[in-house]
Length: 111
Length: 113
Image 1 (cartoon, rainbow over the protein chains, first blue to last red):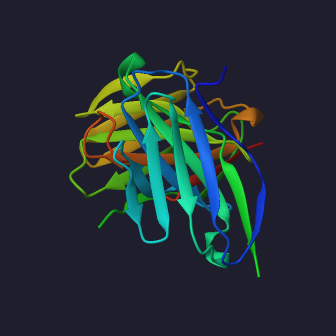
Image 2: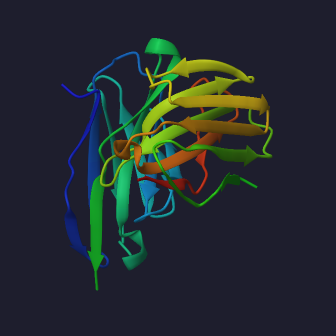
């Protein structure tokens, strides 16, 4: 089993749609969780941190479920500019806070 | 300002060359990272420096040699690379190395011929 797993997609959605991504992680002692977005041939950019209480930033909502070991990202009212790869990131305390990226979920938002 | 800079943007080198990649941040972060990213794959952690000391080496071949001259700078020295080492090399920094948010530089696109 991979340490961090994501549905690779691609997700093809129309503008205005709501889309949700999930990510599961294997180590129950994982410490911190993030969503990054990466545009083609660019660096990953931090989208948001993920907390057990859930957090929202505009159209984006992230949630952490420690019991089930998954994190989610919800994008409401999708824009064309949301088209990117969304990377789930977990910091694992084993081996001294190792950062593990999921394989990424590709999103295409169409007009 | 959450800026991490990397030079050069692109690098082409032969298998017998020696070159260095450079990374700089002025956010006062005390942890810096090197990642390697192949096309259509996620970044893979190579090295972590925490308070200018090497904290993690993810079993990277010795032809990659990291160096942290001070808290703002991180270098990656390259020697005798193989064509399969061609990739995007990303530098990142975070406040501390205990699971905090990382900020990435734009990367150096390396081609080994």
